[in-house]
Length: 170
Image: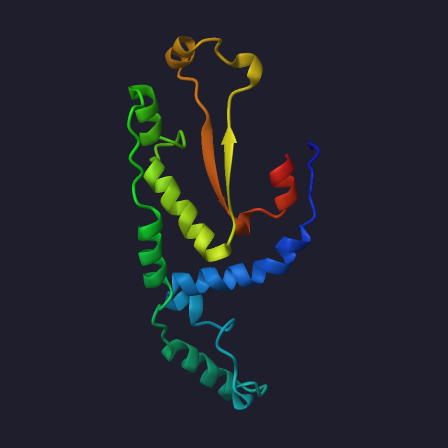
């Protein structure tokens, strides 16, 4: 088997992850995410160790509903923050990159919108920009265009990065 590196969770991650999950659940707002044993606590009579008590609790969870009051406000705020950027004076090569900024078919507008969504929920978001190895890079702009050389961007939400200091410093 190959060697694997396992990093311990950063203390910030350990401190924030429970809150990030709760926020994500309530922004999701679905019955599956919110109406469950994590958020609906048992009454004293439902905590008794018998079948009737647990069936009462299960019935109450099943009847529960949630009106999502978080997502509509976040969506309005997101729409304000992600107004399209008007960039004049760029050539067609850069315009094509604007339409596929990630390298995986996602536009600049989509990437900014997703970044804002995660930033509003968790207060942190990261974009990893990756490029070909330096010894493989073209020497001129024309060579790069002919070979299709470009960088790629991947978006990470805060819940997916366990060591922010490692991500920042490399």
